[in-house]
Structures are given as structure tokens and as C-alpha cells.
Length: 342
Ligand SMILES: Nc1nc2c(c(=O)[nH]1)N[C@H]1C(S)=C(S)[C@@H](COP(=O)(O)O)O[C@H]1N2
Ligand SMILES: [Mo]
Image (cartoon, rainbow, N blue to C red; front, side, top):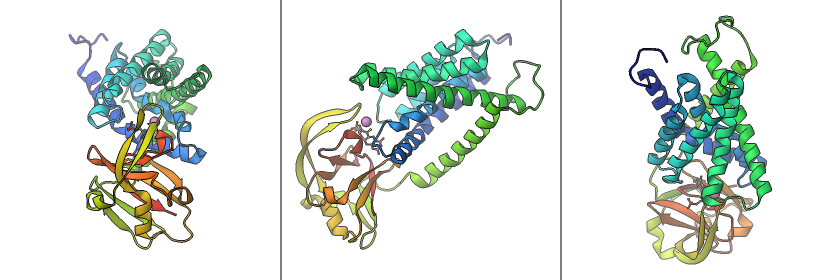
């Protein structure tokens, strides 16, 4: 603070803010991917992934912890939300507001307890993560009963305490050891082992390697109007949707997700049942995964989809989207790039 700088934020503060805010914004698709993987591990189409929701507010807690400036969390949230917005978040401008509110709640948790920083980080993470659930509830009435809202809020809070708060304690400890951040209390030994520091090192390494894996191998590039059918089929084949317009059919379906609710309307596109017949699915195959370019995927039993037109692939905003009549909104995979048969 007493640096003699005439501006409230030093150049270093602004650098920390810009780097961590942008990193958080860019990594948000990766956090979404981890959540999707967890949902598959648990065997639910959505919900369980909330357990890593705290990773969305980690960046704001870190900004506050490293700069120590009032307002840095809110500003960090704004930067993160803006980067998410321009990189095409499906939430649109709402993501900027959402991220700002998270940043504000991070500060509400941090400042009253800053003398006990371990506690302050954990409350900051918990409240910031809870703010995510709260903002969604206020904007979209996601949870129609108070107990469900309470349960999800609690899950988000715990996730924030661990993956944003406790994680930050360890990161700051390691940064102090490395001399990157000035030590607040002199009494600590130069290099000391403690649980938060070890936790932070392991988690940071796990995140680094899984993020590299995600950006290099999971995200699928290529023509947005083309998808590939692989796995238990006669041979891997690509489908460029516009070529198949004479096979299009129209169905009427209603999208009900947690956030998005679209009334019943007509959709015209290529039936997945046509694609599967054309690709000649193997006799022993029982399931398909419909995979988006962001790595998000949902699974369907072949027996439920081969004899009808309930699943359609169509063009939406220059990308392919799955319409899944009679299935929850979470199964309407966007940016479809691949159908895996097995
Ligand atoms: N590739 C991809 N598809 C996705 C998702 C996603 O995160 N990635 N989210 C799903 C969820 S949770 C819902 S509710 C619907 C939302 O549809 P919308 O994008 O039209 O709002 O898309 C689904 N398809
Ligand atoms: Mo959703």
C-alpha cells in the first residue's frame, strides 16, 4: 500500500489481475469439461459436476490474496467474465454479470477476516462459489424448491472452500517460499512443509496436465458443419450436413434445461437414425456418445433411437446441434463433432 504509487492499483497489481482474470476466463471451458467428466463417472446427466464449481472462483480469490487490494476481486471477476464472454460462452453477457457477482462475494468473505488469512480465503471461496448458484437462481429460477437450492448451495460453498480457498492458502504459501510473493508473517521458516502447500502443488500439477490434455486432445477442431462417426461402424465416415439436405425431416420438440427453456417448436435436420444406418453400426453395439467440440458428451441407447426421428442433427448459428425430443435439455449437445458407437 505505502509504495508511494499515486495510483491505487500498482502496475504489478494490474498485471496479476489481467493474467489471472484471463487465465480463469480461458480455463472455464476446461472446468466445464471436468464437471461433465464427473457427471459421467457418477452416472448422471448433470449436477454432480458442481463439486468442482469452486475452480471458477479460484482466480478471484488468488487476485485478492496476491494484490491485497479492496476491489481487486470484483475487478478480477469482471475481467474473467469478459474473457469468457468474448470467447463465446453459451451464457452470453450474463457471464460477465455472474463473474462480477462472484468477485464481489469473494471480497465479502475475505475482508472481514483478513487477519486470519486461511479462514479468509476459505470464506471468500465458499461465498464466491455460492454466489454462482445464487445468481443463477435469481436470474433463471433454476431450483423450484428451497431444499434443492439449499443442498446445491451447500455443495457449491464446500467446493469453493476447498478448490478456491484452501487451494489459495497453499498456492500463496508456495509463492512465498519461492519469493514471488512477499511473506506476510516473518516468523515462518524459510522452507517449511505443510498440508495446504502439498495439496496445492499436487492439485496445480493435476490441473496443468489435465488442461494440456484437454486443449491438445479432447477439444475437437475442424469444419463446424461436419461430424464424424467412429467406433463400431463399417468404417469411420464424415458427414458434412448441408450435403444431406434431401434427407432432412422436421420434428416438434421442447427444450427444458436448468437454464434454457424453449417452448415446443419445429426443428428440421438430419435424423441420427439415418446416419447410423448409413454408417452401418456393428451388430454388438448398444450405445452412442454424441460429442461436442468442447469435449462435452452425452450417451444414448441405440435401442431407443434407431427406429425413430427423435434425435436430429441440425445447423444452429453455424454449428451443429443435437435436438433430442423427449430428453432433458442437458442431452441436446451443441457443437456436435463426433458420434462414437460402441
Ligand atoms: N457441447 C455442449 N453442449 C451442451 C452443453 C455444453 O456445455 N456443451 N450444455 C448442455 C446444457 S446443460 C443445456 S441446458 C443445453 C442448453 O442449450 P442452449 O445452449 O440452447 O442454451 O445445451 C446442452 N448442450
Ligand atoms: Mo443446462
